[in-house]
Every structure is written in structure tokens, then in C-alpha cells.
Image (cartoon, rainbow, N blue to C red; front, side, top):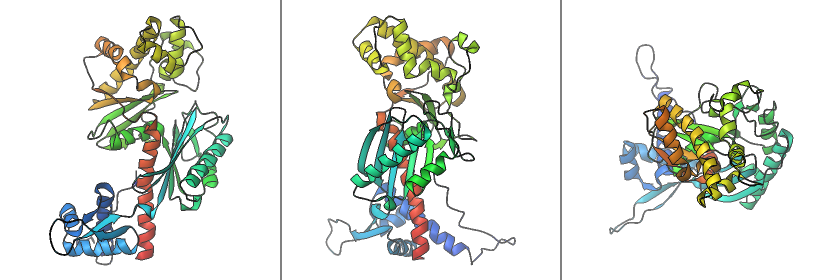
Length: 409
């Protein structure tokens, strides 16, 4: 998320206000405040903005004039039922910048291009056939180019591209740690390679964090301030929202629950792999393994197992129950550490909460007195790319604000 604006009041050691610094900072603060209000709540008149922001009308007028000169807001006339001259209304200029959001998954890439209000201008789904980091950079850049062209734009018009993927970006090496399901994604210099191919501002974030951000902004977690988003699919991860903000931890690895020591007891003696113990017993391939061991004939996919369970097939129901038991241990761990308002389940496996919840509840009853609220995510496979657009618009707004106000000022 963007850094908070600086404190507008700086004092000399004697306590006096620095006249040379404070006015410009106060002006910037006021402009940020009004622009954020217009982006988040839509068009408003000057009296409405003054009331909402707690500013005087002259201050609002001066701030809006600067924003309008910079092309960050547009002015029109508000609809009114009253006689007389219509009030002047201001709106954030959604076309002041353009954002791309990309979800890089093991099987698919999802790409969205949007304006600064998050309105989607184009969308693209591409099967991920890459077998290494270089190929993945290529398919990402090519897919982005296609989506940008479909939106009627060129790459030079992109303000920011936000990418979601498994794992955690290592800023020192430029690679992604803990992304065992994306071959070669840990390669050093990966982030720089993406920037060179895309050619502008790029950020890489954990997919579970972005999905949590999306559910907070547009989905099942609206109105919550403390929750965990547990995604289960090809891999497993948790996005944490604490006090209304995504929590990443000191190194960005908060929520890497795939490495929880939860799983078969025999797993302690196995040869160590890049995948964590918990991921090996709850990811999609584990569901298929449980179904095969229960006697469900193959070939199978995790989705097929859940479909058979919905049809009442006993062996498939047994596989789902085994999966739910393992998930119950993770839910118990999350509840004990965080005591969140809710745990939102997402991902291709997590979206089947209606089938999993009885088994999760049974597992909770065996290991803990806690009964956390479980909620099914609303955004499905759109969650990560939606979160990438949310994050991208926030960063792009900061960029255009700084660039345009500097020029206009």
C-alpha cells in the first residue's frame, strides 16, 4: 500500500511553525485528502467536500484549483432539484492514469487493465505453459501487451503494473521465495527482468495478500477490520488483514502457512522438499490422492472429486472429509494466534466451504474450544487479479499525484 503522507506540521526546536515548509505540506495534505475522497466516494460539490473533509470553503477551493490544473479532477454541474444556478461538482479524473493487474498462477495467467477508479478496460486469460523463469517473464509480458492493446492503449500509457504470485518477493535478490509451484520463479534478477520487459513501474505481491485485499474492498470481508483469508488450491496461503491493513510481516512471509508442521506424522521422516508439510496435505494434489486412496477411479482432478462429493459418492465424501480434517487444524491455529473476526476461505478448494465446513467443525471440536466464523469468499478465481487492480490503483494514484502536482505546482 502507498506510504502515508508526511506530517504537515514541522516545528523548530522552539516550537514555532516553519513557515517555509508547512504551507506547501498542508496544501499537499489537503489536496490528497480531497482527491482520496473523490476517488472513494464519487463526485461532490465544494460544500460537500468542505463538510466531509472538515476544511474551510476557501481551502477547498484553492486545493481543487490546483488539482484541476494538474488534470487530476474534472469539474461539471451537479444535478439539483432546486431552482437557480446549479452547483459546481468535482470528480476524480479516472483517465489520469492506467493500471494493469496480473495474477500469475501455476495453470493460468489472469490479466486486467483498468483506469484509476478500478473500472476494467480489458481482461485476458492465458494458460501458463512456462517451464522456467525466463519463459514466465516472456508470457507475462506478452499477455500484458495483448491486454493493453485490447484496451485501446499502448504500454507507455500504463502508470503501474501490480503482479500477484505465490511466494514472497526478495528485494535484495529480485527473485521470489517460497514459490515451489512456479518453476524457476526464485531466480535472482527476476523483478528487474520484469521491469525491463514491461518498461515501467512494477510491484510484485503475494497472491493471498492481494486476494485478502480484494475481499476486503469488494467481497465477503467488506466491513471487517481483522480477518484471515485462507486460500487453498494448487498451493496454500493466508492473507492477513489487521486493523484494516494487509499485514506482511518483517520479511513479507506472514501467512506462509504451507510450512506449518501439520500433516501425517510420518512426514517428519520424509526427504525435505521445497513445499511445506501442510501444503502437501491440503493442496489440490492431496485431494486427488485422498480420493484415489478411497477407491475413486481416475483420472481425477480436485474439482472432479468435489463434484462427485456433491453427487453423494461415498468415496469422494470420504476424501473431502479427510481434507476438511487437515484444514480444521489450520483454522484452529489461525484462531488461536489471531482471534480474527472471521476466516474467509477461497481458492479452488476453499470455495467449497459448504462441503468442507462440517469436517472442519468436527476437527475444531477435537482440538480447541474456539469456534471462529468461517465465510466463503465471494470473488472466486477473480480474487487475486482483483486485488492486484486494487493495489495497482492505489500505487498509481500516488504516482500521478506526485508527478502532476510537481508539474502543475
